[in-house]
Length: 96
Image (cartoon, rainbow, N blue to C red; front, side):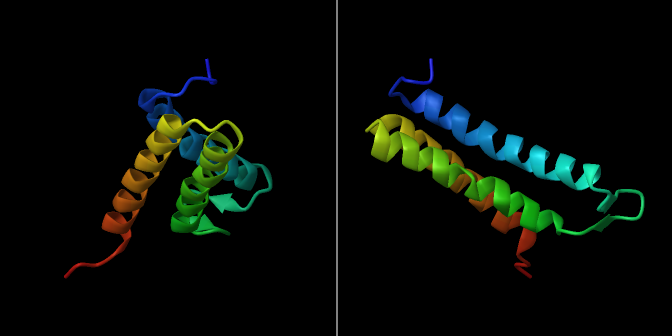
């Protein structure tokens, strides 16, 4: 299933991989006791964890574009990455 060259697969993977990585980073921080959600204490800021998730798409993108030569899937991953980056900047930049 993951060896197809189409936009839909790329978009789905591009949306799910950052969420999974973000969840793994948050779970690891909870496991090590570096998160106190009641007080809002995080050893790594929320924005940094979000960027780690977005950046993780680079590895999937490279695999599909370079190793498999699946351009459509790679473009879907890139589109999802741009969407996440746009949402991130909209949330974290002050436009006023």
